[in-house]
Length: 231
Image 1 (cartoon, rainbow, N blue to C red):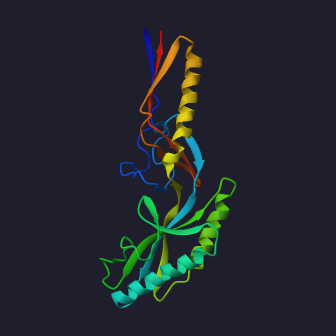
Image 2: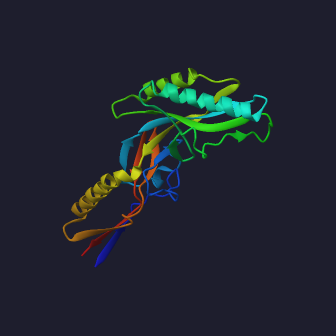
């Protein structure tokens, strides 16, 4: 029996999935295509982002720690109130995995600046929902306008951190879309190599991974190998 081995491999995605939780998660992706083109698997599922995301830092240099905390907290409260008036705007926090902001959450910590003893900071994300029919530039303009009009309290400043990122909610929900595309690819392989050939795929139980390919789009994929056996 002659065995022809054809491997379709997706290597490291732009964000590690080792810490992926079983719960529904929102993943934030920054930067476009971190790896080489050859590192992206041949079978992928392209999807529009659920949100466009801008990371920001709130900075305050009021004299006392208590006053700094109060002014930053009240600024966040103002942002939350303003976000409820604009469809699709939400506040989140977290690195890699985004969580809706709860002002009373202990995980939402205001950090003291190590280089300047009279300055406090906190990193949060402001995001705007985007649908398949909406234009990224227009949504980014809405997001930028929201940030520009932020009601900052006291000596609080708002600084943007990096470029616009994107996020996707629960990428695992698209597993069967990816698997369906892999199945179609295997069918085409059998048609190409002839009726005396069969395919066998390995790695299909792996996690769904992702890579950003445009300002508002990403591809989802599963790392797998397919072996074509011809008798």
